[in-house]
Amino acid sequence: MSRTQDIPVEDKSQHAYGIVDTACYVPAERIRLSDMQAELQISPSELHRLMDEHELDTIAVETKHNVVEMMEQAANELLTRHWKMADSIDCILYTHTFNPLAPFLYDPLARIQQRWPLSHVPVQALTQLNCASMDLLFSAARQRFERTEARSILLLAADKMYMPNSRYLQDSTVSADGAAAVLLSRQQPVNRLLASCVHAEASVYNSVRSSPERFAWFQQTFSFGLIKLLRRTAAQAQLDLSQLKWIFPANVNEGTWRRVSEGSQLPLERFYFPLLSRIGHAHNADPILNYQHALRKGVLQDGDYYATLSVGMGSTFGCSIFQHSHH
Image (cartoon, rainbow, N blue to C red; front, side, top):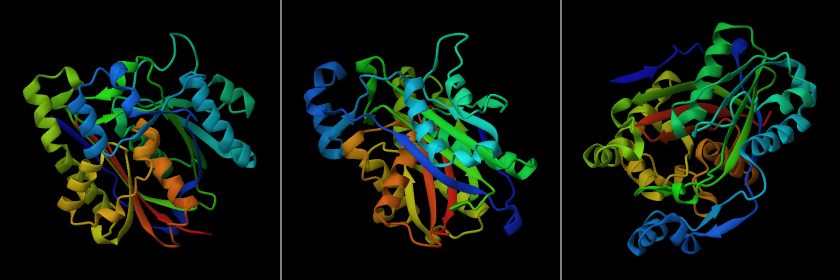
């Protein structure tokens, strides 16, 4: 069983929309992976693989704020810079990998909506694509821009690991804590959103509790799913894959993006994930964190095409393509 979501591309300048700005919250505390071996309950050989093969070193761990406060930090930083655009926000979309995000009958966005104020703005939670859910938000936002008169949309994502031993994802990565906020708008977008696709292959729906055979199958094949979705999204954007200057992926591990690089015939240097070793896998904030780093370092040039690329347990995949502009 699989489900794919595509929207025909409509390349008209009057319908342009995209990213105005982003903000992220990552805890200041970093713990060396070698000091986490006991709490992660991993063997010396697993530790060796994570550090030497997967290129993980330190993990960002939040010790003061809960996950809702982390999301508020990112949202408040973004909206402080763009408070004049708050009146144009017609929808808030938010996501998280782990359920539940907040206790029953607790509204995780209440303080954000009251502060700005956005209490009248409809809110929609979109989950169940695990760590591919940031691209799910981009895809849903694109549908709203194409099918409604929405002026601006606020995207929010946050995750925090409360059980230390649950940070380790078998044979793959170590989870960090983090949050991201993205403001999309028709008003002078710096990064025009050209295409966005998501795909779910439900054969590993039970995550790490799947049978060993199914989990091994997922580990061996998910890179092919990423390559297929990258090609499909490029086609939706009416681009050749070679035109993508940068890929901002999830901070899974170095081996994953090496395999995707080889399979897609894109140079590994175009896969930009310098924060993998310093932060770990901050779930849905990863692509935005890597994009922000590239922006600060002056990596993105005017006119560059770039993609976000993400994968979640259960064989979920996401990809979105943008065109950068300095204007």
